[in-house]
Each structure stands twice: as C-alpha cells, then as structure tokens.
Image 1: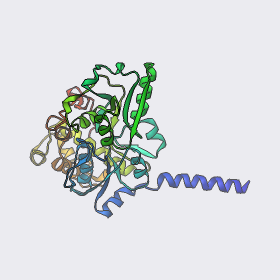
Image 2 (image 1 turned 90 degrees about the vertical axis):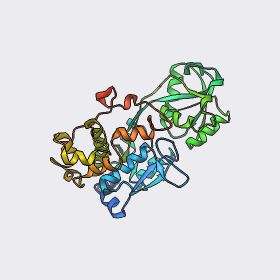
Image 3 (image 1 turned 90 degrees about the horizontal axis):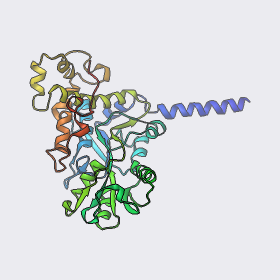
Image 4 (image 1 turned 30 degrees about the horizontal axis):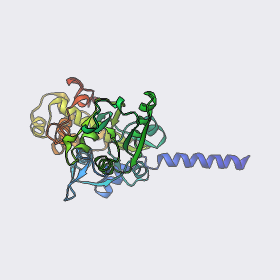
Length: 340
C-alpha cells in the first residue's frame, strides 16, 4: 500500500510539474534572450509570409511584433519559426517558440487537452470552398462525389466530414502538409475543389497564375475564431499577450493610431485614452511591463484597424472586407475589455 501511495504521489507531482514548468517563466526567458520567438505559418499571404529578403509580414506577424513592442519597446525584436499545421502545437508545447500566431482555430479540444491557452481572437473566420469557374458549380451542395485538396492537421478535415455527412454526400480527401502544396495541387487539377478558412482561400487564390479563373463559393460551414496561443501554466504571459490584442482593439475604438499616438498621449483629456497610453491608472505594473507598453504597440505596429487593412483589407492585395472583424460599434463582433 505504501509503495502504491508513493507511486501515486510521484505521478501527481510529475503532472503538476508538467503543467507548471513554464509558470511565470516565459517573460523572463524572452527578456533574457533579447527577442520573441514566434511560431507562424510556412507562408500564407496576408497573415504570415516572407519576401525574397526574408522579411516577414502579415496580420499574424503584426501580432507577434505587437507583443515584442509591448515587452521590449521594439517591435523588431522577433524571430520567426515557420511551422506546418502538424508541427505548430508541439513547437509551442516544447518551448521551441514562445508564442504561436498561426491562423489557428480556438476549439474545446485544443483549449482543454493540449496544455495550451488561447489569448483571444485576431481574426474571425469560417470555412469555405474554392473551385475553378470551369467546374460550373455555384454551391457547395453541388459537390457530391468531388475530390478536395485539404491541409493536414487542421479543423478543416473534421468540418468537411461533418458537412458532407449532414448533407448525405460523399467526397474524396487529398491531404497535404503545407498550404502552398495544397494550392499547387488544386491548380494542377488534382482535386475538384480546395477547402479551408475563407481568409486562406483569398490568400491562396492570388497565388494562382490566373486568380480570376477561380471563385469562392457562398457557403460558410463553420466558425473559425483564429488567435494567438500560449502554453498553460503561465498566467503572466497569457495576460500580456491577450492585453496586447485588447490594446490594439481599444486603440482603434478610441481613435488612437500610429499617426496620432504621440499627440494623443500629450494632449488627450479622454480618461480612456489616457489609461491606454499610460498617462494615468494602472499603467504597466500589473503586466510587468513599462507604462508605455500600449503606446509602443500602437506607435510601432498600429491599432487593430491599421493592422487589418494593410495586411488583409482594402490596402492589401486580398481586399477582404472587415465583416465580423469590424468593431462591435460598427457592425462587427471585435470587442475588447476596458483598460481601467
């Protein structure tokens, strides 16, 4: 009995250690290294992609940069780890990356069984379908018996199975590890349709030799809240990441942008703006950051609206409308708790 109790205690202790190994240590580790190691996609225009000089851009990349701006006062102190969908969670769990911002859907399973926490939503999405116009279909309900190019290790596979089962249709999946492999196979005619988050479909379509040859069907078959992910057991780091996202959203709501942030910090009488920019209130103490952490985010990376428009919105090749990603006050569902 004593041996059994000792063994049980040891297992319990190991379980506690495994979930608290990073408790309170991520910020310290990041500061010691002098940079943030951020996990991103292997290449998805508008969200995270590198040019021929190795410069990374995109909405997810800007989220990484915003965290670096808050922690270091320098948005440039980031190194990027391009990860496939199958690699991403292991890389975060093992400590290979400090933060995962890789168009990753927030689900119950991922939140409760992988030792991870989602810090918020930086893009509300939904799964759709991309087909060639030559296929002659106008609805996903016309795709009974079709073959689909899918990226492995994503919620896309499960959603597709659910949709076809619910509608009593059949299909053939053809899976690939990387999104660029998926779109190349689609363009080569290896599948009838490509299915993924709608944001990805717009990104993948512009990679085709003739983007006008393909169209996104009207059906949206799932909810895909995409956002930054951290390891469980480090509430300090979780708070930092989620409040960086909230600061960018609040800045847009209060009219604070990269162009006017200095002026607003110096002259605004609005208490909401003054708290956001570290002029009064709790400032940065509760997060273990400088008082100007949010001001640094907005000045160096921009508010949420600026990030959205230049990467995926009207100032980008994708031209995606704000839709659900508009602020709650402008018909969308993007909403941030108050800084007070």
